[in-house]
Structures are given as structure tokens and as C-alpha cells.
Amino acid sequence: MPVYQYIAVSQDGTKTTKGTVEAIDEAGVMALLTKQHLRPLSVTLEKKSTSRMKSLFGSSKVKSDDLVIFTRQLSAMVGAGVPLIRSLNSLEQHSESAGLKAVLVEVIKDIEGGATFGDALAKHPKTFNDVYINMVRAGETAGILDDILKRLAIQQEKNASMRKKIKSAMTYPMVLLVITVLAFFGLMLFVIPQIGKIVKGLGGPGAQLPPLTEAMLGISSFILSWWFVIIPLLVGGVYMVLRYIRTPEGRKNFHRFLLHVPAINTIIKKVVVARFARTFSALSGAGVSILETMTVTAHALGNTVYEQSLLDAMDEVKNGRQLSQIMEESGLYPSIVSQMLAVGEETGQTDTVLIKVAEFYEEEVDVAIAGISSIIEPVMIVLMGGAVGLIAASVMGPIANLSNQIKS
Image 1 (tube, rainbow, N blue to C red):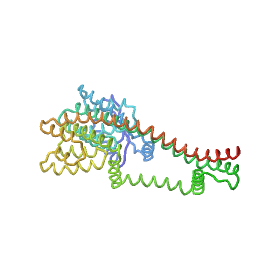
Image 2 (image 1 turned 90 degrees about the vertical axis):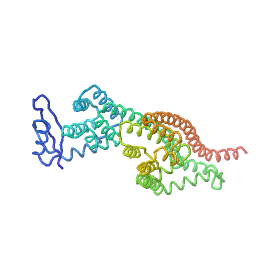
Image 3 (image 1 turned 180 degrees about the vertical axis):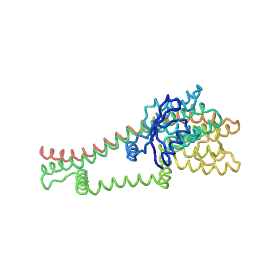
Image 4 (image 1 turned 90 degrees about the horizontal axis):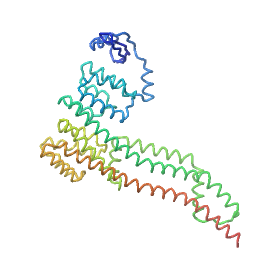
């Protein structure tokens, strides 16, 4: 459907509005603006290149920090009694995120056209995920939108904080790994061949070199002779692995593999449990049905093994079984989770109980990440030093032999 740009003023002529709208023709745009109590001044067909340029430069990307701030501010304004449309207009005008401004313009337009807030957000799945949309819909239905937005802001802050800590913990070892690989290939391609020529020149054509030196010179010679095959194979191999992981089957196998890797599997399980507890608690506290809560929570866990287990549990819940019993039998969750969930099911305070579980495991994640970071750092330094030391030993060995021969 064509996209039209418009400029319109309010009926009293005090406010000018600019935006875009999808319509069959200009007459459709005029009718829509009139329905929204606006008087159109200009309606033009939007050029496709403009939307392509926006997509190319990623202007529609909304950062998680911007979304958290928006949710916090909207919660405060709605809680203070400011009408939703006025709150959204104010936040759109003062937002520093170009992507968020563009999204809010569309959301405001849809609400003014008669859509609910939740339905308007649902048209922007790249910005607002299923958890966000379902909680907003529940908040609108129950008339507690301000409270729901506060819960959403807290949940987003916790999720963003956890992601940042995991990325931060992985950045240093990845940088060291890249430096080690680059240093190894640099030494093998440029340093070892030159040193080999010098050593052989000093020792003569019949000089016997230590086995380690011979091995290093052999590896260096192989890399120099076949670099045009080795490098494409390495790059192609990495690309194929990443492409396979992006497929549903590859993602499932990769997640299953990670759950069997020592040290890493502990962190993954704690992250998943924390996400489950906080998301399930937020949706349950918002009044979302148990089956809808399970569906949305499953897709928010970030691990296909746990996601599938929760989706499979839905059939048993439909048949009357307690979710706490199913989780205890699955063996994927710590016993404390099923026990606390059982308490919540008995007392009717599932959201309150699971918040405690989420806070506990978020602290556990912090401790686990700090622990593995303190282990990874010296291990990577030892590996880097070992690689450089191995090359240095292969060079110093023949030089020491030559010096002994000269002294004798």
C-alpha cells in the first residue's frame, strides 16, 4: 500500500502535525485525517528511496536504554493522570532517539484512529516484544497501565543489565583470542621465515636444527605456500558454522551443546531461570492467562531447550496438572524454582514469590560471571604467553647451539 506524507493542523488551528500514513489514495488520507479531527494542508506520496535510506542507515533501530527511559517516563505521566495521547505526544517531541520518535508517531496515529495502545504497539514487533505488548494489553484491560509500565521498566532494566554483564565478561577473552591468533599468524608469516634464513645461513647448509625449530619452520612454510587456501577455508568455515547456528535445527543443537559445556552451562541455566522467573512473574501479576503467560515466557528465555520444554508443558497444564510438578520432573530447573512456584500456586501469590526467585538468581548470575571472568583472564594470558614462548623457544634453541659451537 502507498505511503503518503502529510501536514495537517488541528480544527482550532493551534497545532501543526506532520507524519506518514498508508492509504489507497489521497482521498483515503484526507478521510483518515478528518476522522482524527485534523485539517490537511499538504498530502504527498512518499518516495521509496527515502524509506530505503532510513532502513539502510538503521534510523528505525531503538536501543534498549531508550525504551527503558520511555517506559519509565510514560509510567510516571500516566500515573500522574496525564491522558495517554498527550503523554505519548510529549515523549515523542522530547525523545532523542530518531527511531523511537518514528515509532511513536505511528503509534499515536493508530491510537487516534481508534486502536488500543497494545494493538498499536503490536505493529512494531522489532521495538516492542511479546512480553511488552501482552503486559500493556493486560494493563489496559485491568485499568492499571501505570503499574504495568513500572513493572515493564524494572524488567527491561534487569534484562539489559544482565546482557551488558555477559557481553562485558566475554569481550576481554575474545579480544585476547583475536590478538593471539593474529600474533601467531604474523610471526609465522613474517618473522619465522626471516629468522630461519638467518639461522641456516649461520649454521651452513648441513646444520642440524632442533626438532621444535624444524616443526615451526615447517608450519611457517606450509602457511606461506597455502595461505590462499587456508584463509578462505577458515573464513568459510566460520561463516558456515554461524549460518548453521542461525537455522532452527542448528540453534537447537548449539543450545543443547552449550548446556553440556562445563562452567558455561551453569551461567546459562541461571540466566534462563532468572528470565523465566521475572517474565512469568510480570505477566502473571498483570493478569495474563496462564497459557498465554507460558507461551510468551517460553519465547523470552533465549534457549530453545528450555523454550520447548515450557511449550510442551502447556498440554499437561491444560489437563489440570500444576506447572510446578511438571518443572520438577523435567530436571532442567533447580528444585528451589519448582518449590517456590508450588508455594505461589497454593497461596495465589505466584508473581511475588517468583520475583524473589528472579532476584536471587540474578545475584547468582553476577557472582558466576565474576568468577568465570577471573578464571578466563589468566587462562587466556597463559595461552597467549605459551604461543609466543613456543615460537621464541624455537628461535633461541638453534641460536644457543650456534653460540656453543663458536665457543668450542
